[in-house]
Image (cartoon, rainbow, N blue to C red; front, top):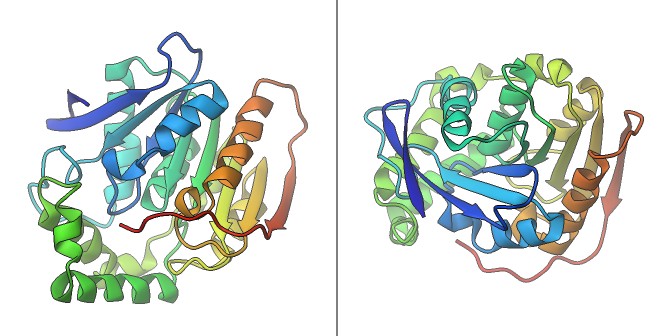
Amino acid sequence: MAFARVANRTIEYEWFGDARRAGSIVLLHEGLGSVALWRDFPRRLAATTGRRVLAYSRQGYGRSDPLSGPRTVDFMHVEALEVLPRLLDRLGVVAPVLLGHSDGASIALVHAGAGIRPVRGVVVLAPHVFVEDVSLESIRRAKHAFETTDLRARLARYHDDPDSAFRGWNDIWLDPAFAVWNIEKFLPEIACPVLAVQGTDDEYGTMEQIDRIGRQCRDARLLKLERCGHSPHRDRPDTVLEAVREFVGGLDREVEPVRRGFVCGDPPDDHDGL
């Protein structure tokens, strides 16, 4: 791993794949994620797509600096519009493919929709574009688990400050002011192709999340995976990797914009939990 000083914070990051490869994929993790919690996905992604892959831990996660105070409702906007551009400039990343999971997927959509720098393509896994009751109920259950089970100890394996990581995510999502959070205004402004992936058993959101992406983005492809929860890259890694490989390969070819979706019913791959 390596560290960069960005926007007055120390950020952990790691490159995967051959540095001589053209084109980069930038990974944006979920609300409790980090570089380490991507596990073997970045290496497999680099090998599958033939592109170099960058993963980093946002402030409050992994080995990056802990939070200096509570998050605000616009924390994903701040990450997308202020921190991410500076990190990409610091590391010399130009026109990447953004691949985000959950909160990281929302950050990818905001960044691409803002149009502040070139983005070649966007892949979102279990994204949030608006707040749903099912999301809040699962987040409440996570809070109970953090307070009553070994969840804190498990998070401590991946985060220098597990309390900062958990509270920074859980507290703001459960703040009453967050109930009206919505990023749909960015969707029609995304100029690049988008691949949106969601599991039919996602405990943090309904299929309406990616259906709205399909209706509002100019060039969107939807992949709905049966027997898959909130982490498609863990529940169905082979299917996700193949879909990303096909999507990224298509970015280098002239294609007509397309809106289409399908349900994939192959059984999930085995994976370890958190």
